[in-house]
Image (cartoon, rainbow over all chains, first blue to last red; front, side, top):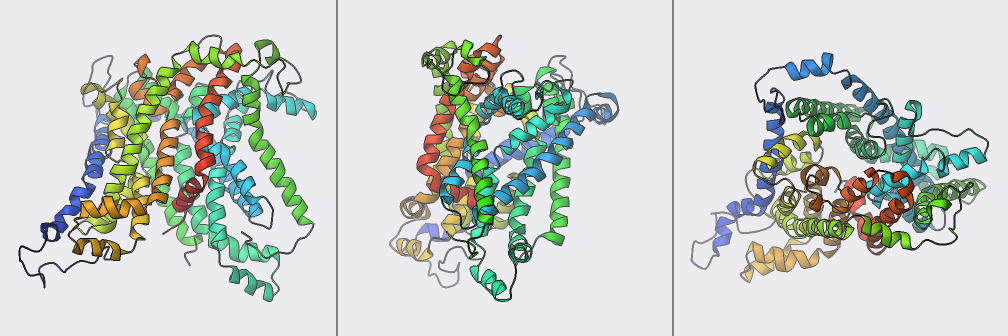
Length: 311
Length: 283
């Protein structure tokens, strides 16, 4: 696709001194424009990523001062030695399996409801979107206090309607659900995207369906949802990638406890790298996460051929 | 906008019910935060909880903000914000011009590479970069976060800007070129002034992202107590002993951290929503 119209290179442009140098040099000038990004990409993306692969085969330990090639030992240690590795994987999968689908569905339903003939649509949209702009650390403090067993507002609601108090952040059964509930607070970000997608659906499709006597449900299933699948796919993918790296909430609220019930993959990795200085082992963990995320991206992309509708 | 032409029916009542309930659930945590930030420690334990503290402990704010050097943390955060804004508005825009308007070998490939970095988990780079920054003496300084920002490493911003630039008619730049303007000039004097809406979007995102960032500042700068950002400072505050009874203070600092972003949201909502929207829709 030609991005810009200009005299064809070397065809009809007379090489007089009147032709600005930039016209002839333009094919190289493009690299000047993208150079800052390219340098940043090499220095802060590509080289560090490749180094992670290299470090993952070493016993690099900043404190012990070791740095030897140890082959696959880190990976072997991960799968068979480290007794907290598998719990961290399990916790992460648990979190992803609930937080992502619930987030996608809730955000989509909210957008559908807002896309009806409700009044104050703008006000509702603003209110639902608010939590998405609240800084993560501040949001975590807020929920830390909401989940407080003795004086938290959530338990106040529960006891008011006749339930027992729940030890949200201090019992292994409830700590993960608590973090999932907290993640649902910011579904407004996805909702805004769905809403924009819904408003892009051509009205005449609905009108034609109504002429044929389609019910609201028919229109939803046969028009709205199929046309929204690209947007759903996008949110699902970003949700998966983000949730596999869940860190802040657990790090700040529970520190991985109680009894390692919120020790997520990233949290375990963080401890290995920055508290135990096992850079080699942590690199191996990060490489594995990288490969897992890559595999998921490819898998979701592959399944998308079956369910995403590109009209 | 009326998106469906459904007639009013009793179902609408249910829809309003769900939306209002949802809005209440969404906003309550924020109200609760502000309410708690104005309570004394005694009022904290009131059961059922009091929504409007009596008396109102306004002094919580001044006391909380002086318990740790939050003015210093604010300054540190603003330095990073400045770097992020420069990177977003100038560098990313410059790079986006290259991707949108220049032709060169490998452009499509490099663009694809750039887009794919959006999907790469940042964690892979965390450990090697930490080691690298340690070796070149950058740990505990602004550099590990400011330099990548200044170099326009944000693929999402470049993508948004490029999409916008491509929608600007080329006739304008053609005319300027005939008048002797080179591409730098066209970028700065023609494209930039026409791109204020997308620049506003990117600028707001840059602020929001920097204000929100936690793991990077914690790992790369947090080792130096003078170099904490607001997010890291708030985390340290929570970790200080006896934080149970510091809850009003913690909520006061949280409120102070939330307010600027809410103000920006209030004034720039249009641009923010446009950007979020563009991220989810193709083209």
